[in-house]
Length: 155
Image 1 (cartoon, rainbow, N blue to C red):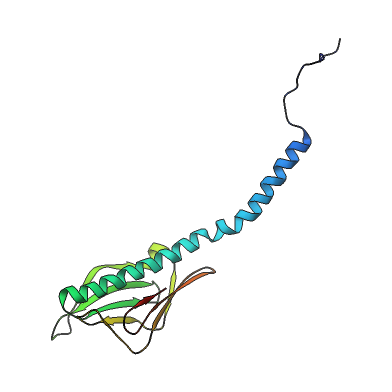
Image 2 (image 1 turned 30 degrees about the vertical axis):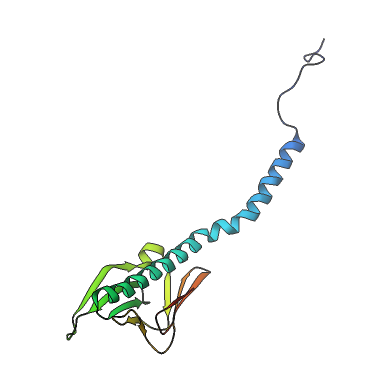
């Protein structure tokens, strides 16, 4: 009698099973890899746009609640920074509302903008004749946010 008896089972995988699994893993990784590469960039750009939209709301609400002119300042030069300031009545002194958002440090994005500030009246209405467009980019991913002359946000 030989080493193997009739009816005994062998454990392990056949070469065809191994090849099928390797091919499936290769196809799945080829499909998923581009999405995994741009995922952090998309997340950073979306986060930066959400931060700008949040500070837009802070500026508008601060102008209304404090009865003073508020300015959403967008500094596109490195590092990309956004902040809200209130002008004191009858003086050139300004107060910063909330914290200064360094979007480059937080989201690693670069900003491009058509205007460096959006001004809100004490009634919460934007002052301006044209739209302000803010573009956040990280690598090949970009997103645009537009603030109308009246201060309305358009995504």
